[in-house]
Length: 335
Image 1 (cartoon, rainbow, N blue to C red):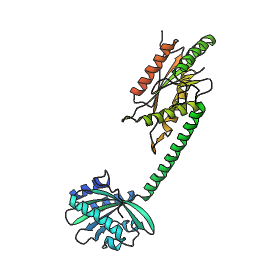
Image 2 (cartoon, rainbow, N blue to C red):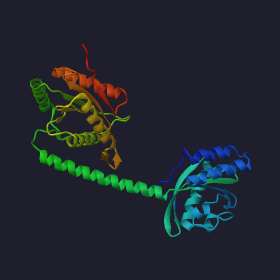
Image 3 (cartoon, helix red, strand yellow):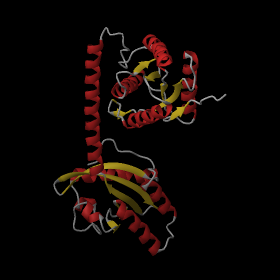
Image 4 (tube, rainbow, N blue to C red):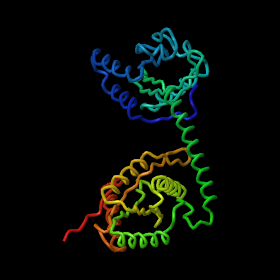
């Protein structure tokens, strides 16, 4: 039976091949045989049907097994399939003959007592024959369905965790979306860290993190999910003596106490990879979490709050200019 969501048009693979074959009917027998042999290992089977009789005048070796039949050559669909399935195939064939270009359709057929799903691309060969390239897409659709269920489960778990986190942090002064402290707390923490490092003659690292934008603008809900994702990753990857805060709409800052530039770079590179692998799901789709980071060091990069912030900000801008999803170190001035 033809699926309700049958698609028309020229697909990038089988449809293009069908179009090309129709334009090169003068090919030798060996050339046609070679093309068919290339298709079969890819799971596709080729058939040619007579328009006048509706019978198969050519069928690649694996088509009979694909349809659960002993043979296909010389038979019609009515001798191979059920009545409603035959009608579905015939409707698409009539569309192909009327439009005179490649058409891709999806069909569900009963093969050996099991429902199988097929993608079939058809192309008229002159007015006498109809070329069809069959591909069994059952396992692919099953994997897609399993992936959809897994993504839905991940999304449900993320929503539940974020709701629980909001309830626990209510009234704590943290950012509601990311669960991190906000700009005012960050500025205070940065001043204290500078004072502590000056008194104890030790260094620390300042990291500015920006969420990379994609080719299309995201909805407000999608942006919130990404902010939640960054918040989860920062809470899981910072120590008690560190400070992770949200300092702007798409900006985060991390103070790595007692950490030098090389160690900070290694830790942030690990965080970047973890974020890239993190699934942030909205409506069953993985949004993809890509971040850029700029890292500066006190006192080597700068010894004042404003200069340190500016150095990290310039570094994260440079990371995004290079394409995003990377860590850039602020330069250390000499002399």
